[in-house]
Image 1: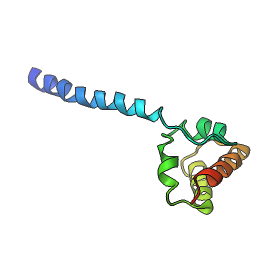
Image 2: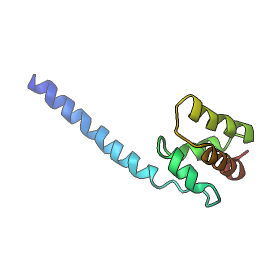
Image 3: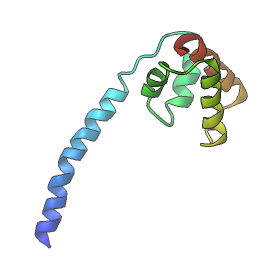
Length: 98
């Protein structure tokens, strides 16, 4: 029994180290400075990494960003006001649209 517990602890150490490293990378994401950046950082980063903005920018056009914002609000329940949603959409479409 002690061997199993020790094995689980030792196995968890590399995972903890990876998690610490991964968290540090999330804070290094720098989005383009433009109107609406505050709403993106406040609302989007509250639930996920801002990596998603850069990753999705390679294939999302304006309608795709609108659909993503609607999905975050309607499907995932993101508490984003209509004003912030509009600002986020304008920011993403202007700076990360295809």
